[in-house]
View 1 (cartoon, rainbow, N blue to C red):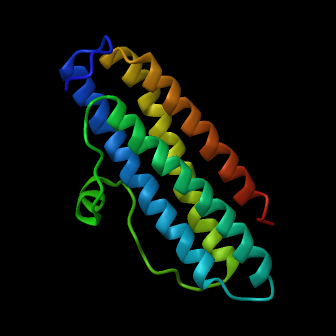
View 2 (cartoon, rainbow, N blue to C red):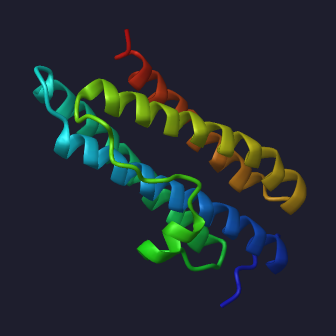
Length: 157
């Protein structure tokens, strides 16, 4: 059944594609964060193991919210690795080292990239597709990533 929510099907399609790209980025970032959680080593292992766990759990919640937003617009959320690989802006590279500083710098760069991508889409979703609700939703995601980036940045010298 078509979603009758005051936004045309064509506009909802554009919003859903934008959200699908965001979902793919969130999934890849969550996977990279989980990698840090599993593979970090060094004297601060326990502390950083728990820190990365808190971050990937937060990203897991974000992933669910983005997928549900896509569904609320009447579209299906991408849910395969193949789709995520085709949609994401991120690349996966093995870190040079498994120390916490290496992971923190890499994840911080990804969060900052995500913030820029989200910021670019806030006005676009509102102005081009006339979806103030999703624009507000994307603003909330940006704020979450700003906070996560701050937490990462706080660990740097």
